[in-house]
Structures are given as C-alpha cells and as structure tokens.
Image 1: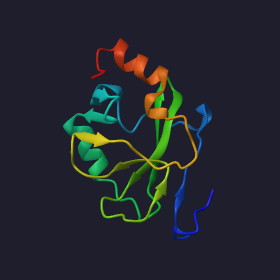
Image 2: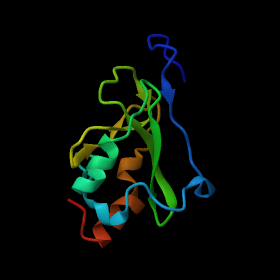
Image 3: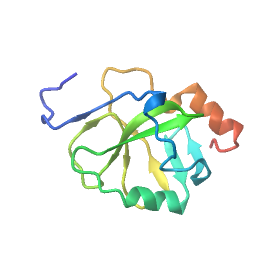
Length: 131
C-alpha cells in the first residue's frame, strides 16, 4: 500500500517465518525485564539497550528484528536510526541507549496489532514480566 504523500524510500513491513530466525538471538530472553502492553513499552537490561544503541541502521532502511515466543515470530519490525524522519510502515524500535523502548507502529489499514497478541501477553504474564 503506497501513500502518494510519502517519499519513495518508505520501508515496508515484512513477515518472517520460523526458518528465517537466527539460531542465537540478538537480545536474550533474560535481557527483557518487562513488557507494558498498555503503552507498548519493553523494558530491557542495560546490556540489551547498549546492543540496540550500537546498531547503525541506515536512514531510512533500518535493521530488521523479529520478536519471538518459543521461536515463533510474533512481531516483525525494524530498529530505526534515532535521527530518521522518514516513515517506516511497520513496527519500529529506535536505536537509542535507553532501557525503556517503545514499540511504535505505522501500519495503515491493518487492524490486528501484534503488540497486543494473546500469545505475547500470555508469555509475559506467565513469566511475571507483564506490567
């Protein structure tokens, strides 16, 4: 879906499959402290925040990420450059050195919000990390 008001460099959403997931995660489960499903914020350890801030995503391409539950893709999106002003039509996490990351969303016309996925909420609730 293209909006004529957006520049042609808009990065679009992608869908990942289980076979596309790396064997070792970029952010380990133990580095995820909690998830606030009301505000769509994920609280990370300092080490995870540093990993994200050390990324150097190009403007506007970003770097793909996949948040998984038991190796099943749940949220597909992009780590985006903190200086980016171009729209990313997907889920986005900014590459800043902050332990509180907002999972932003710009997906026009799509009603289902993966940030509210029942499996995601259940996983954080089961591990006592849902705020």
